[in-house]
Length: 554
Image (cartoon, rainbow, N blue to C red):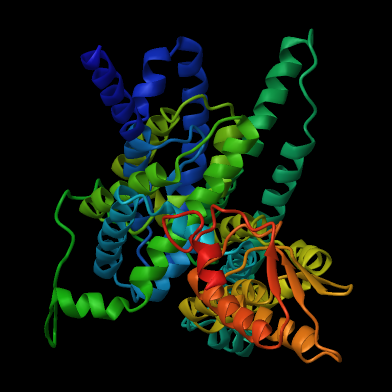
């Protein structure tokens, strides 16, 4: 019997560590068809997005593809969500641009170190730490990031060059140089953006397929649906063909991506040092140059991924394990750094496409990874003709769905105080991302501690003062409760006894017990009493359930 139990425990542990063991034995031909369809659709989405996101990160475009394939394979083994797809995202690319200094070697090392941090957090089961970051802080950061990313593409749609990347300087120099706008880039960028919006609207309004339709109509409907779903690839392909036609006539109308390194990346160790004209930059110096990035990148990467995973798990009726997600993301970033990947996380847009296409298991990511590998192996010479304005339109359309202006109205209606951490995070991230996040978290913490230090009370005035506590009674609130009893009971005219109703108190600590004990002695000196009623025995000052009461009575 013991051997059977131990075998079952080992099997559960193995399945928890490798979720593929849960769904692989049940895999069917129907699942295979749906996974292939979803994988191809996501693959056609990820290739143009990866090229565009590398531009945000300030890296050569091939690094976007380097970051897009390995996560598909690793997440299939370790991921607990059937819908999510790992790869480069707009927000993560912005962070890489900030902390990797537009240097591919720093970007790859950042992926390795971020992965190590995430993996250790997952092994130690520290996923609960993100619960201390409130939604207003996350919304403030993501909204600021989308504004920064979106405006950062204006220069590419206008064909402007040598524009700084720091947000406020970028705004200034974009408007300062607007007279140098290239008409070709502007027209093509607006046309691509309009086409992407139209295809997105068409996808949302396409009616469900009625039965018994003629074959030709069904084929046309399926073609429109596929084109709308793979709109990024279709628009970039069309823009590239237009650019190729102009270039073949030696008309240099558009700003093109240019030459891209062809072939698959080498499998090699991440760069732990860097040789420059001024000497060798050691590993320690490279780590110091990351600054707060070593905290911000792993944290935001996990936050972005787990938020997406939980959203789609709730929508599709299954659960995800936050700690297992940390292990999956960490492993992806560590191993990805060996193929020149920069930090990756879950992508909301591609995950939505994956889910809507009907993916059944994480195996759909294998198909997506193969498409990215084929693109690297055979299609990189064609990337030369991709206009930067078309990639900018892809990015603007992608991040527009993340921007949530309605959160301001919601916070105003639900809790006006939550607007403070939202605004601190939103405004601070335009200056420095780490300062914005830190300011938002700090304000959220202050609000949380204020609510603990000022618990809700209901005071009733009978022969004795009756104070009803509506929440926990912890040490930050000890002085507040002491002053309340002192001012309304002992300093009243005449002084009177007091009763503290602890029916709704869910926790109490030693500091509070000690403060109440001292106050009880003060009441006794005035021939009055202070009673604690409905105090639950489980909230004791020691291992003995009656310790709290004994301590108060002596």
